[in-house]
Length: 303
Image 1 (cartoon, rainbow, N blue to C red):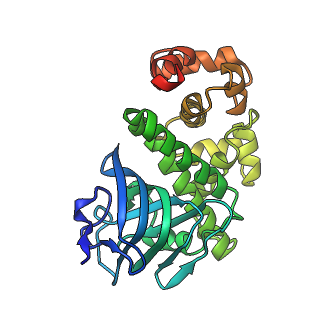
Image 2 (cartoon, helix red, strand yellow; image 1 turned 90 degrees about the horizontal axis):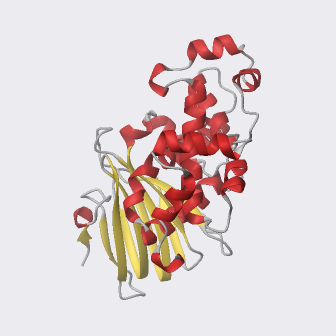
Image 3 (cartoon, rainbow, N blue to C red; image 1 turned 90 degrees about the vertical axis):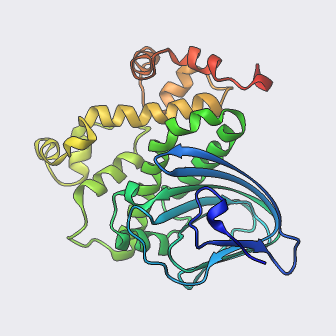
């Protein structure tokens, strides 16, 4: 007997969850809040089915978009009538709109890490979201970046779940940029695409490069730096501050998930040419130097 999804945080009420005919439907799930209605789920299952049989009209505030990493295994997924191919050798990144028809069948045993995000938080039209979802594929530059990011979030959820809300902004920004990338590729170089969305995607793809300057960003989009500053939305904050904030968010996640890396290595990995500059910026943003933050958030097993 199918059970409604309303008992699972992050799942829309109309989503049903049940066992498959080839399994007992055993599963265990941990649900962690990301803030503003977004959730992260860590799932282990044996013989699990989930889905929605028809389109559900939803406002942007009620519509939930999910992105997940699924381990290789005996599973099948269709979304909006199209089959999503599974990689038999490595984890697969999938994404879907819970208000659209979808059907997941995990006949064997497997696991997943999934983020459930309100459509409104992506600040994209549903047409762009669906175009991106329909054309998501491993060849996109941000595909492995978001896949690895979600896997790291799963590790954070296991060791220090209280930190997850602080990482929500970077998670949503990566997912948004991936959707834009997939949608842009699907429709080609159409003149109507949003320039700021394209610029944000470019920043996300080159964020860890130290020489990511306004001049370089502007040149990549055939405009002047002055034009770039003029069209850059005030809601994003100053351009340099936006880049620094995104770098610090990634670095803070790496401090937790890559304990073998030194502070200097993490600084260089995330676009900071000088470790002292990284430490200064980190302290200003989070109230303590990166070394103290790492010690204070270290899992007991790692101490």
